[in-house]
Length: 265
Image (cartoon, rainbow, N blue to C red; front, side):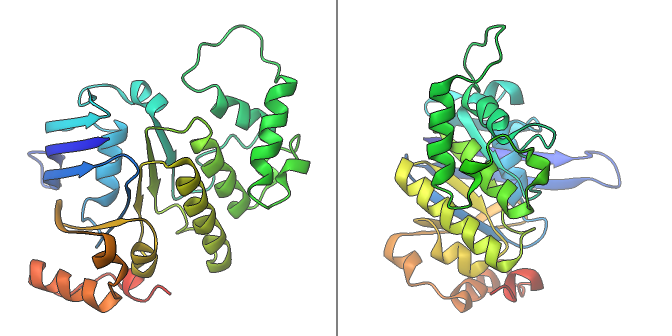
């Protein structure tokens, strides 16, 4: 479903602020893979997702999505294939619009649009059923402005909107990091339910090692712009946080220095 071949990216090249973000990333995802990505600050985790989404152009290498070379396609041309949920709950929705209006925008993404705006009865019924699966009571508040929702409710709604059209690839960039622990668990549980039910291919950047081990069928660790560890199946299920820390030390030659990841419950 996704293949990255020797993808490289350097920011501010030739200046004192030059930063090599990706140093020849190679990665292959099969359809239905749910990959969690961990690593220290500046490891290249979010940059990898941004390169796939087309936020920045890559310097060199190839990105192939479902057999289509998207390496040079602009961000808007890739959007119809991708679902994205960001760390900031405010980013994925339009606060001044109603819940059902936000849902309609997501539902019609990538489709031809006419001059009429009205949401059909059939669409409203679909949105009602989809919202009900979140278990947050939003199906009874479809005409409420999204700006009135809590951060957790907005993030759950964003997740639902990102998967309405069953994207070829779902990109989750620390999408629970800004939430309190109880709400974060709820959104993570919803993530697992939706990805499993729709058999989506997904990549999830997380700062929580326990979540990285628990979620998905595969885990990769990045360091200094490269993938340094890739584990799947039973081997992943049997991992402990201590195993990941040791692996990082063995490969990088240094201690893992990101307290936020080490101390996360």
